[in-house]
Amino acid sequence: MIYNSFNNAGLVKVLTFLQTHNTEYLSGQDLSDVLHISRVAVWKHIKKIQELGYVVESKQKLGYKLVSNSELLLPWEVTAELKTKTIGQRAFYLDSTDSTQNWALKMAEDSENDGAVIIAGKQTGGKGRSGRRWVSPKGGIWMSVILRPKFDISVTTLFPIASSLALSYAIERIFKETPELKWPNDVTIKGKKVAGMLVYASLESNRIENLVLGIGINFDVDVKQVEKSLKNTPNFYGVATLRDLNQKIRPVQLVRQFLLELEKIYALLNGQKTKEIISEWTKRSSTIGKEVEISTLNGKARGMALRIDEDGALVISNKKGNSRIVAGDIVHLSK
Image (tube, rainbow, N blue to C red):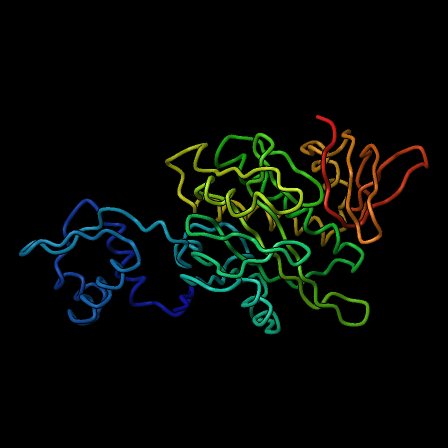
């Protein structure tokens, strides 16, 4: 079942009324009269609301009372109080899917879905960089964002780096913890991976038709279980979960903040203000200044990480001089 932010008007009306009157019981008749729907419709909506993880108390002669909200990243929860102009204003939620990227790639062809976000409770075929499997159990935030950018095609390779910067801002604002950024697009807490980015670009002639940004965030995952699944994969360096930072933060708070930060970063890219992004990313980078080894399609490269270029390429220095690495798997050799 897929839910969206614009086709569940009756359910959202009932839910919103329960949320704004959560200190009192509301009778089925009251809800029916105020919302101009039948009592049967009220009952059906409340049943569905309960199925979606909201706790609604029901008492004879008193009616219904919302006790707690759902932890699911339901589309109307994402768009409520969302301060963006475009990104995330169209939201979709699936309880389970193979990959949100697959859904987003199909939907990206429709210009109406510019800025749309697709979120899954879990993924059975999550994708990482270079075709690797991304373990995506319940408790994580697995999402894709569809964009139709105005920036030049040359900026495409900088986009995942910029997106990881947006997520680091969001984590800092919500959790009061500053993550580090590992080239090319990993977000880490205390040296362990808490999130990653993946970008698919659809190009036509010399312009970008659309971008699909995939984001995987270990919000409240079983670290030991995920590490067990990944410990034998190349360049594995540990897993972190955001829930360890604060038990009270709801996942929707982080998603809303990330979408806002992403829209700000996206505006900078569209305005060709890449230097500001590179400067801010460098301040948070755990890679710059380290001795690194990078596995590329052309073999391994080793040297001191100096900086990233305007296109996001990593510049390293060794006895042979400076060289640019556009893509690859990196290992930090020095602390």
